[in-house]
Image 1 (cartoon, rainbow, N blue to C red):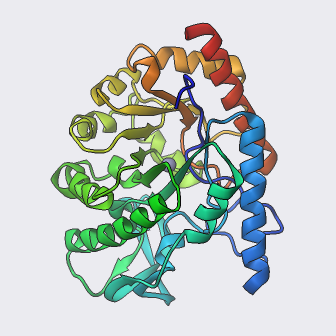
Image 2 (cartoon, rainbow, N blue to C red):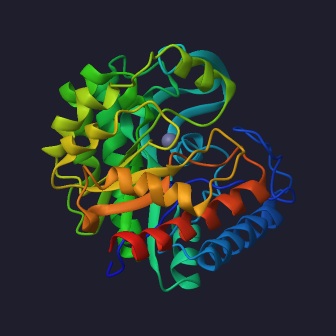
Length: 342
Ligand code: ZN
């Protein structure tokens, strides 16, 4: 990436009303069969255009083809029962979700994201980034009645994720990102096996690799949880030193409007840092000046050639118009920062 401050979205973008229910984390599709495939492709194409028009440098598929960032992967895995979901507390019981159940040995049914990855590659000449859930977050978002050992199950998933990641690289994906919100919940597990599981995920890859660690979507359960975290959110402090030692190239983190002390970014020495400069938990659209100011404050701790302005997290449950305005603010703020701090 030659440009300074190449802006990117974290991952998900809102789905149009003709594709699925809106403003929901687990929306129902509005189409079926071939119509659903076509609608997913149309929505992907639409968001590629929106991101390019805004002026983002790294383009994603906006996760238009998956119902949810974790279950969208699991639907392509054999050994998981989606027919009889169970209610389970996830993210250390922060909220309850209906989750599928592992009933036997897991195996990929085939390619997971081939259609949208190839479509994305065909639709833009910009760098493209593709997201998948990380192993720790996956095992925290399903029930297990077969493996009986969460670490064993996580590594079984890591093997499947690695298989799909290698194929995505062959499809022309430049950056593969693993989303691990669970890394901000189970910090001891991160050090004990979470990073090793990610290493399994990226084995053999030559493209750039990233991990996204956040405080979750802007849903009520997450906002309530944040209220309990005190005046300073220091979860990153426990895991970043170990992540700095990892073989991952990039780290995506939450920053805008959060209580994360900015200096914790200095623990990521050597990594490219995707700094969250757009708050996804608020409908208030940032100004380019606010975005540039967050970039300026991050520059105290991240070298400018390693700073990628990004959204705090995905924007799936948001109003489409607000998400679009936030994309514009993100790109305009990055441009302003180039003028001011290059
Ligand atoms: Zn996130």
